[in-house]
Amino acid sequence: MSSKNFPSRALSLLVVLAVFLSAYFTALPSASAAARGAWAPNTAYAVNDTVTYSGSTYTCLQAHTSLVGWEPSNAPALWQKGGGGTTPPTTPPATNGVTFYADINYGGKAVTLGTGNYTLSQLNAKGIPNDWMSSLKVPSGWTVEVYEHDHFGGTKWTFTSSSSWVGNTINDKMSSVKIYTGSSSTVTKPAEVPSHIWNYAMNVDKKFGKGGDFALLLSAVIKKESSFGAGLPGSPSAGDGLMQVEPNTRNAYLSQFSSRFGRAYNHNSEQDQVCMGALILEEKINRFGGIYNGLLRYNGGDNWYPGATDSYGRPILADQYANQVYATYKGYGGKN
Image 1 (spheres, rainbow, N blue to C red):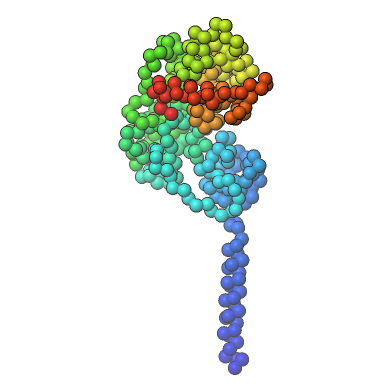
Image 2: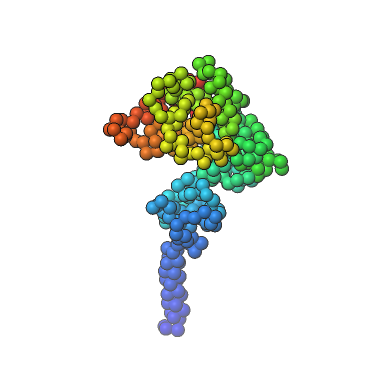
């Protein structure tokens, strides 16, 4: 009896052991995933790596080498908040926008963007690196302007339909992009805006590469802040001219102004007043996500919240300010 049953018992024990070991090793995290400590730029991260950033843990969604501007909180395409070490589910690209692809024939990584103007840092935050894109899908009635350099500089290529291969000249050259609906990004001066004010606004718009829409927003802000300059005499504000930028805020942006415009700020120049206000407003829009939120912080400060008061206990009505300016901007034909 023992000579015939021994192999059967041995096999049963081996099966049990194999099942146990399989379950044990399955429960272990993947060897390729690692806790990498605090997030840092210029570092190679693999899928499922975890990092800490601003007190939270993030899990890597796509292998990449990090860059300044790709912080986990700014790059949802690259990082998912929370740990775990398991591969997060793949989220299909959105369908309400233009989809850019890493490879020809709509292959590889895909990122969909809605209407708007995207500098390189904004593309990075969406998961698009510099010098990228080999094909794209453009919805009917949409227009895409691809720029060779950041801030809408260099050669511009325009797409009004999908392209399975953008060609050698354009391939992996995208560093900034504008997306809008319709066939043209040009705008018309609102009737109530004085010509010299419109010229100031358009000069800044062209410098920023906004296609005219930003000039509409700047005109709306100038109307609210200074009635196109008519409300400046006797103004109790210490702010500068047309866009009423206060001295402390202005001083904090002087170096950025010089870097962006290639000259020192002259607070007696109306053009520079608009340039400075535009620089600050653009930063608020990019930082807080959208024109309305940018207007709230332009007027109420970065830490504004509903019910906030000033040092005298007076309510800071940034929401009323944003409502009025945004309504004027949309009345001018603003698209965003």
